[in-house]
Length: 333
Image 1 (cartoon, rainbow, N blue to C red):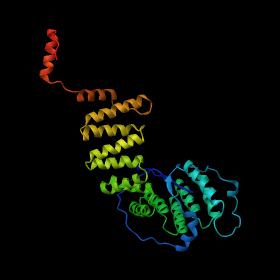
Image 2: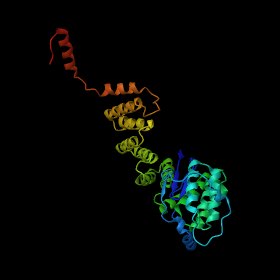
Image 3: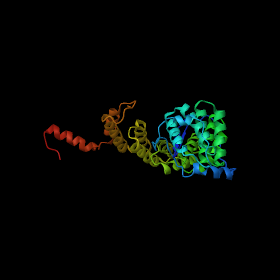
Image 4: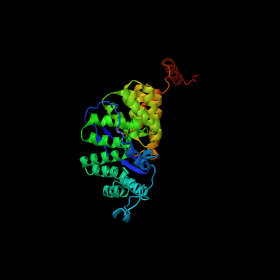
């Protein structure tokens, strides 16, 4: 099982990588955060009114390093610089494009331009993680958290992922659990927890976090499929089918979603007529070029078999009468 999470935030960017779940997980623990009120106050201008969003959703900024960003920061008075929103927009775009050298340069520029801002250290953490330097990635995200005052859910999640990559699963789960409590829209944090609980067959906990994702993003493909499989494992076939139907509607090009829906309809719900309808719609979508992949089995043969099994059956006595009438040349009513 792999976990995918890619996010941005308004004014700042956030990306993660495919991570192999390889260790047993323990549930998140409640813990009181250590807060630096003065640091939190200083960084407030940089942290206020941020919203976590899917990567690329905002579409703002281009991956570029302005020439002035390569120069030493000019002397200035207190308060935020005028440049920092532009630098963050550029860094956001570079994270999306995975141009990590630019992310690193912009991280340093942000650190020079605004020493109270956590975003320079944050982007440096992402760049270090991309290069495989997890020790530096941890150092930088701890610095970002310190500058933010100590209770940023986003930064907790970034640290949790790095710890997870290092095999510190229990500590990672604890941090991510706290992160989603602080940042309600951190849907990839819920996905992180849901998929590990799902793997470990803690189905109620997995369902809770999949549902949290869907409350924020009702068409999240991973959460829809994950929750459907949880419901199926719990014996709720009707709910599983309904979720796969939503997934097919949200992602009609996904062949496996169609096949899974038809399988549930036919074998779990015992409704071959509905399965036949799904297979027919799938065949039509393939013929229209809406689905590029092809099933590994003969779809036409499967449709024919279901058509025969669902066709109205003529009573044996009437069938014999019909045949007899044909032989005598008589009209049979």
